[in-house]
Amino acid sequence: MTAASSSSLLGSSRIGSRPTISRLHSDSLNPRSISFSSTLQGLSLRSSGSKRQLYSRGTGSVVTAQNMDRVEVDLSLSPRVNSVKPSKTVAITDQATALVQAGVPVIRLAAGEPDFDTPAPIAEAGINAIREGHTRYTPNAGTMELRSAICQKLKEENGLSYTPDQIVVSNGAKQSSVQAVLAVCSPGDEVLIPAPYWVSYPEMARMADATPVILPTSISEDFLLDPKLLESKLTAKSRVLILCSPSNPTGSVYPRKLLEEIAEIVARHPRLLVISDEIYEHIIYAPATHTSFASLPGMWDRTLTVNGFSKAFAMTGWRLGYIAGPKHFISACNKLQSQFTSGASSISQKAGVAALGLGYAGGEAVATMLKAFRERRDFLVKSFGEIDGVKISEPRGAFYLFIDFSSYYGVEVDGFGTVNNSESLCRYLLDKSQVALVPGDAFGDDTCIRISYAASLSTLQAAVERIKKALITLKPPVPV
Image 1 (cartoon, rainbow, N blue to C red):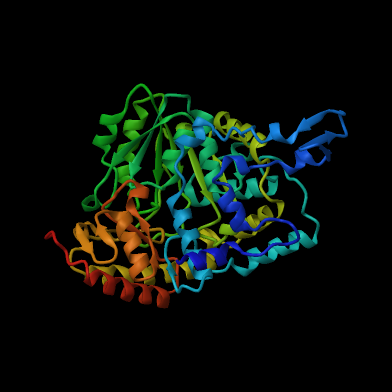
Image 2 (tube, one colour):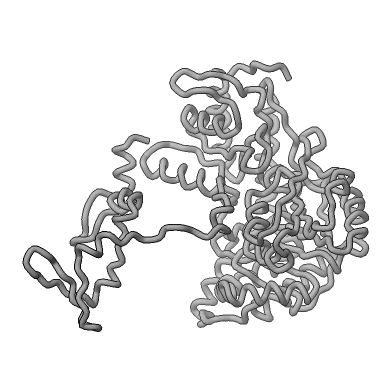
């Protein structure tokens, strides 16, 4: 994007005497330019010879402007904030959106967001909630109506028994997850995370002053955790194992037998808890099936199950998720939430009740979306499978492909530079083919790139054609 287009995006006009966004952006680079207009509202300007003075009407004191110029604002941030990395998926999605708004025809396949509208019965429930006056605060943990519906869903679909006081409804499954980590981890604890992982898991551990311990997996094993590797990494500091099935970013689904092997290892370590992220449970392709980790023998007492409405019900903007688990841990999550955000939106919670009322596994509405996701997955697997030097593990769930493009690394491209890792390849594809993808290093595996197929089939077909043309320049230098 040119400097001119960037400027047009940020704005170049004034409203009254207010500075433009672009002016604010450039000024923010200079600590001396930061001012606090609210502080000066009670001050009036006086002239005294060559000096200007500000007179405080509240205190009667005089402050010399010359002296004020010497005061610099302390711009330091919390070490905890500095330890956290920004989300690459969010950054790339925002960059692609800005390009589209500037008129660049970018195909956006970076965000993990269904392209379907929220099913009509759910949307109507939200609209009716507003009309009927359900617009006030709810109990911090969520309405009894929704928590009871969640308990019924978990019993019927997952074989799990909970009571409403063992459920906390939050503003999305991400909030549920981070509150769980904060609730159970102490400084110095270890959080075990199979890689590739969702970008936020390691950062959640760091926010809790815990240490993320990454457990690598391989594409040849469908990115599934090796129980022997898990056991070899467990220490007295191991506190949490995070499992995500179906997986973001790989689409892998853990078979029950493998989960049972992992459960046997977990059972031998009294401090070890499991956060089971099951947000994609309904987006799963037969013959694969979903198993809730808490349903395994001996695992209910040490599992915190996270789920939500964003993915299966196409409700990303409604911001609604939940966590279920033993009351001792759930009460801690509830306490944290009471000091963070309080309860989730009353309107969204009414919509959530309607979503759970659509039938088993979301009924026909979810089944229709699942059919489309499967068609798209099959198209992409076939299309990329025809490209030399590409490795694919066929996803069993979710709506992502995590493809190994590492055989294309090491190529110098005129006018661009060297493509030597997943990030440079994604920049190259955005520049050359105008397709936005997410580099695998964001997920802990630099050999791969994540492609979201939460887009129409026609959009995916156009993206594949663009990517194939861009890859012609990058002849595989390394045989696979």
